[in-house]
Image (cartoon, rainbow over all chains, first blue to last red; front, side):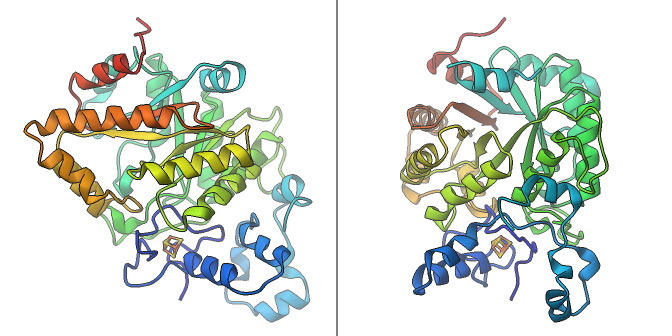
Length: 92
Length: 298
Ligand code: SF4
């Protein structure tokens, strides 16, 4: 199950009154689900805070490539230069 | 120069903004007609971007037309129909025409509109779109390519205090503030308690982030039912709908509701003004403005 809008900084403003997704009414919003989990689980505060990180735009060139290799080679940490200059030190 | 920035950053005044009606036909005469109605009462008007996932005359074209008619535009840019190149192009087009107020939104899904078979884009989301506008003001595109001189945007975002998870809405607003938003225009909220909690939380977390709640002027309960059923993220309590429906004068009851909501919103911490969406399009817009203590500019 993924977010139909493919948001990296959800949940969007369309979440239904019952916590379900704007686009797929039968499905719980995945960002609501993740929020409830991080509130319930005994996680260190610093992990919880990651929920509210400002995550950068997705690199569409990575579509269809191995996420494991991209993780190992740090390819998935490459940011657009303009983004890096403005937001690199604040969050990742 | 942005009047919106001037009011929010350099004065104690309240900012009153209005949603400019979407344009499908009627040309510049139609623009002039809408301008004549709203200009005496509002500091700026939002030019929407395919609002409710329906195609209309484009956001930037209407913003330019408004500016030609002497109304300060707030250009909305939505992530649903445009990728990051198109969004940066909208922003730079705005700068070219001297439009500095930009409101960056995620946007409703295509399924909320009349062409649900369209491809949804969402290459960026709302917080990222705010950040991209901010990046341009540092004198570069997202790619790092230089822009000299840098455009000067006064950036806003939207948040929905009425959608779950309610506590997180405050955090998400602060995230948009960190990304570069200076003020928020809120989604319509028919739960006064949720609006109040949100405004309190935001004003404590980010005192510099100005809040502009939204009210909607409707004629009867049908419009309320429509919003409740069809507009993503809006929930209207049955008691509120009944109050209008069961009144002997539903139009007056609907007016009293919006007056009450407006006064309540303006009394909340962090609130620096009001955004009005007018579906009534009758003389009650003037009545509301006068009853909120506004005097016409001309
Ligand atoms: S409601 Fe949640 S899952 Fe559905 S589109 Fe919005 S953020 Fe994504």
